[in-house]
Amino acid sequence: MFSTYLDRLTHRPLSEDDHLPLLPSGRTLSSQAKQGSIQIRQASVGIHCFPNEDDALSIFLIQRSEYDGKHSGQIAFPGGKMDTSDPNLEFTARRECYEELGIPLESGKLIRPLTPVYIPVSNFEMTPFLFFHESKPAVSLNVREVVECIEMPLPELVHNIPIIHRELPLERNSLFQRKVPGFQFGSYWIWGATALVLNQLKTCCQA
Image 1 (cartoon, rainbow, N blue to C red):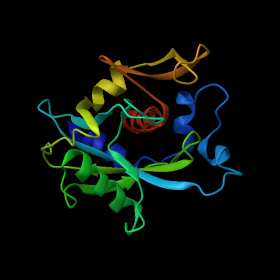
Image 2 (cartoon, one colour):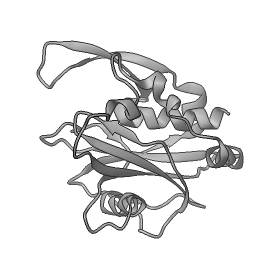
Image 3 (cartoon, rainbow, N blue to C red):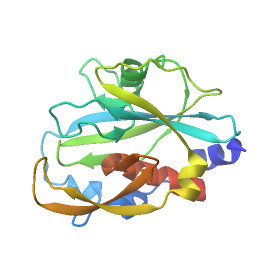
Image 4 (tube, rainbow, N blue to C red):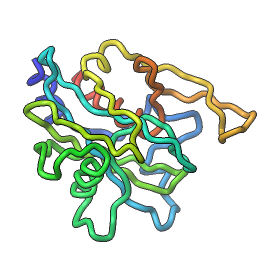
């Protein structure tokens, strides 16, 4: 029953330590990594969860379009940077989800914000917001920004998707590689900030 996971996601205490298993070698927790950084920019993402046809909870991920940037083509949550006109970060998450997936601003009950993630490569602090929908939201892709909307059942994440390590180039077209932890979901490789947030969701559901 999805209600069990929803209860755990709502009430389980959050800890930044939930991110530890998905931190690449040499990377520190966000609270430490951002020390000394200046002019950190704020961003937020929306985690939209809903009952699926198996009476379990699913969430949406997206594959970003290819562009000249650090996060081109990656699997992510819908979201983006805070605009000066946004009243708060929850609104940013809702606005970005509307712009990218067409999910109405007022759709979905806020369950809670999750632990923020600092992203050194872009100097953003990203706050995830968890929303619950009574039924699966209809989506309409902004094809300039999103290639695909991906549905991930949370029981699949909890029970069948282990943490694995893959060799990734340090920079685009680089000959140097490093091992990074992440999740392989079907043909999708998920790492970085998105994987950290997914591991917190996974940990909550296991509690």
